[in-house]
Picture: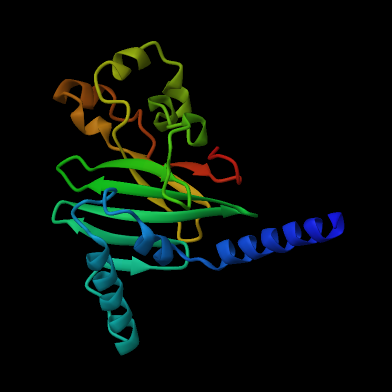
Length: 206
């Protein structure tokens, strides 16, 4: 009897693992609750995927409103914003990220994380956001004026992008656009042009 229970447990575990591994980002896009992106209901998401599939089948170039791969899906959400959904997977663990980027005069991204059942993950240790010092060149990071800089501009103003393989998040700082004319000259060479990369290790981004 005990052997049967153990065997059944193993079969169920393997079945769930295979099922989870077979899912693609478009499956989660369809199953996403309407409350997460209120402007786009399930029927709208299905229509968007149908349009994308039709364009791909016809061998035509898309209009840029949607792009789909196995682990990443990006689409135009409103006239002033777009959304990027990414599936980060390691062994049997999968985390979904939703990156909402607002195409304002100073672009800004907001990121949130969910389980495969679309439960919000609020654990800050999952993805520690880069600090301003991460976007400053090393020779200036310990300069006494760094605190003045931190008090002059928003610390969480950046564009966030993900790679198509679901392995990394890229942060590009945009807060320096809020500097005064005088400070823009003063801190002209402080900021690095390279984005900050956080890689997914199966448990968190580092």
